Image 1 (cartoon, rainbow, N blue to C red):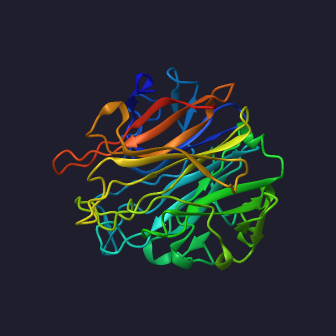
Image 2: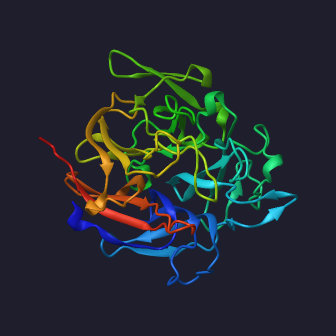
Length: 378
């Protein structure tokens, strides 16, 4: 519904969201300074930060979360001979029983260098609704390890996994405080790698609510069974494909001055309780075939539904030119279904996204965009 598009606000991108027990939503901002009219505004450019969203659109309000550990972008900072730009990106996020778990993706090398891609995850968490944060091992304060000090055994949840899988995580959202979940598992999705024909394959794992911090208890989806159940394995090498999206929407080069990484098919998945169905929004980046550069044309947008977290997934909507409001200059990406802003009858929800636009050689302007989406239930 283009007539419901709300003027973008803030400065940042990605906007993964989770719905906490106190009724607030928490959202993760990347590469931005947030909202300059909020108490606590610092003017700093953050690589990642978490904010609170109160209320419902169009009257929703943002709140600065002072306890989140400082993680500045450091665009032009060099430390020990290395650029410190873009170290950890907060994507997957889950609010559960007063705690917040935040899965933060890390690239292979500093941006601007060739051959970059997301290759790992650092997990941090808060046990007091975001006031203080700890490392995965329970230590405090949070450490932002330098490029050469990231280790798969000591401080990373995933790191250099087969094919680069599980380096961009999305947490299934199941209502306020995850209340619609009945089996006690958290479900998490990821692209199966960072190249076309891998990145457009979706994989997933599950873990019991009380074992999120312990990877030894993670179970990877293997296959759907004839009765609709799923088979799982503790061996990441036995992972199966949950859903496959179209090929040709993964970039392999970054043409703007700040460098970057392959970036596509990082979904948003929510449970729609009134309709008893799972909904996934996913996207592919507009790629120039000759150069592999990103955002050279409008992105791809698709929606899928499924009866179970693992599927089977059926595509119900496709846009090969995603141009919100009919704006052909739009370079929309990272569609996020708000877990709180789903109608009581389940027949509509609010979709949040970011728009990427280069203005000359300047940084692109990112912001929090949203619009209402209707569901065809015929």
